[in-house]
Image 1 (cartoon, helix red, strand yellow):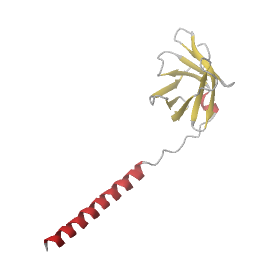
Image 2 (cartoon, helix red, strand yellow):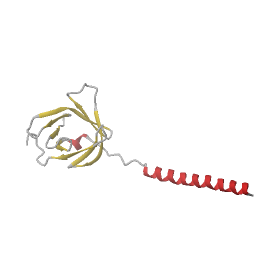
Image 3 (cartoon, one colour):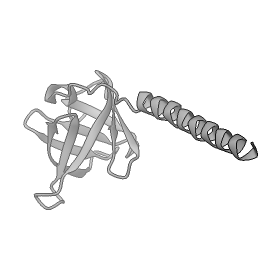
Length: 136
């Protein structure tokens, strides 16, 4: 009789654990749904942007697929080529070798602000400069 109770208890524990595992799995699957992909287009990024990565600096993103980063004093501190690939904005600094890309997924976009995920997993925010004219 004691052995039978132990077997019943063992079966109940196993079933309970399986049920808990199934519930946890189902909850995990529900939370693992990917956010809808942004439809990233080149035109979205054209203009002049402040960046949280370098306070006071302006990033000029040009239609000819070049970019330039200027310090708050107007000195060029970076530049090169840029393009859009899938849901990423890709930067190719003139200081890097031609095959090195800084590909950053676009996490959020509005006409006046966008957020990207950096290679180090940090987030950078770009905020459109109101004048949106080079050199101002």
